[in-house]
Length: 180
Image 1 (cartoon, helix red, strand yellow):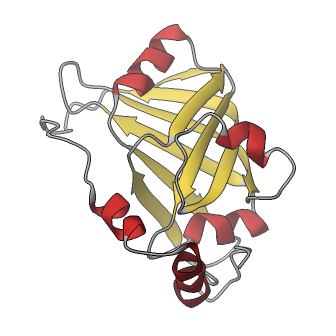
Image 2 (cartoon, helix red, strand yellow):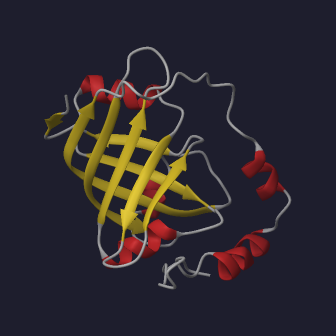
Image 3 (cartoon, rainbow, N blue to C red):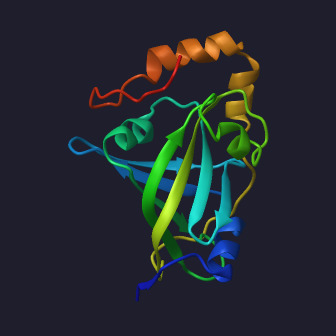
């Protein structure tokens, strides 16, 4: 049975910190809903109603485009081990790019990553847990090194050129606001 909370309590925060991946959901006013898996060392809980996560370069940039229209975001974690549990945080998010006020402060919470494209700052207005009884057991082996290898083979200019080519529009053709 689902339970709702006004903020992340200590047990919620512990659960989130134990997970190796999370999912982000966003949608614009019209068009496709996006759900994207995220990993690496890219998420920080800054308080019971605040989460920030660093978005690294990828093949798409849906969340950024959606947040230009509607600032709602959902983050979700699933337990693939031990007790079955799904935890979701709902709220309003804002996007920060390198050079924006607040970027340096928030980026300081993460390892330096040359392909950091945005930081999303989520203000949580609802936390929900549910059973997760149908989520399979899976074993974590390791983080992938594919992203780091890709970045290591690129100059900063190459990464920006990739943003121009692949990250300027959502799949629905809407702007993402990524600076180049």
